Length: 264
Image 1: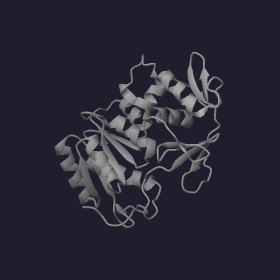
Image 2: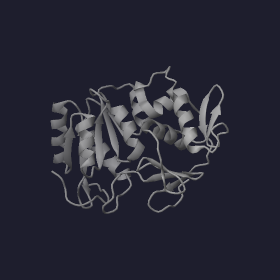
Image 3: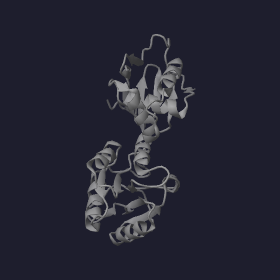
Image 4: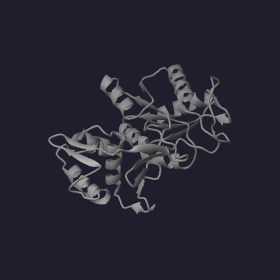
């Protein structure tokens, strides 16, 4: 079912320039998975399916995926949380599927980084048309390239590497950050100079499981300041906005991780 060769583009005949589009279906409903595999293969695509987020991550780590069809309601980590997490370090196109047709669910899916959204039950021809449109909009891949993001942000004497999920100083030494500290710093940098409340930071870094009374954001901010500020009591980068939250004062410059070209 897998096509040989890397993807370099997409056309109206549902074929990548060097082979079939590779689509990953993530849905806990076995009947839906079977129906979608059959539908996609009949339309010239290579389909693979996973019944959970954990199974999907194994498939994603094993090779190229050109698009993900992602169900929202699944046991364990749900599709919205997985979509938001994927968007930290991947730009692979995502179409959300759900039995929920409320506008709020559609809006959340798009806000969390989905490229399109379709409610169940859906018209198979409409799904194929949406896949076709999303793949056409996706930036073409060079030979050997994947949809992994290669964003970096430079500020002060540091470079925040999204792809490698690490922070390095001007001596190229890695700064020891926990996963939570990295996610928090990235959220602040990406939204700079916007002021983010504690609730917003919890949502951006930990999703729906966040406790609205959780004060760990303050503790993580304090630890981050000790690691990146010359004087944590006179913060240069992470500013406190009284009674509101925090903002990254930077400035942070976005650069392409391969070419070093600024992408501000």
